[in-house]
Image 1 (cartoon, rainbow, N blue to C red):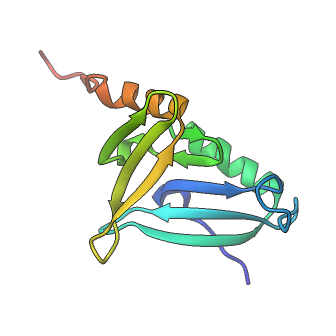
Image 2 (tube, one colour):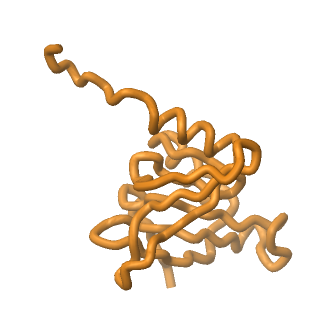
Amino acid sequence: MNRFININHVIAAQLTTPAENPLVTDTSRMIDIWFGGSSVRKQLFKKMTKSEQELMVEELKGRGFIQSGNLLIDPEKVLFAEMENQFLGGIVTIGFQDNGKPVELKLGGKAFNELCGRLSAPPPNNGAAG
């Protein structure tokens, strides 16, 4: 069975590499994907090669995703961010499940600080007269 990911709907991705899971190899990597929409849905994708996983990381980073370890997150989809500690990072909410429960992900300190910088920046002018 082949699975295909529409990367345009991905709002977060968690990579699994051999360092985290000894059952994962270069030919059978895993990735958890969160998709946006009316509610946030999580899907586990298997059978991804190392090169496919690396290509997806580059595409997501090219779209402006922030990377925290093996987690990549779209800062534009963050609804709420709460810092636990400036070094340890914090928790971000990227949406809600069908049952109304929030989807929360943990970011490390460096990535959380990058996110805070992006969230606190003034929005671009987009050529509007001021």
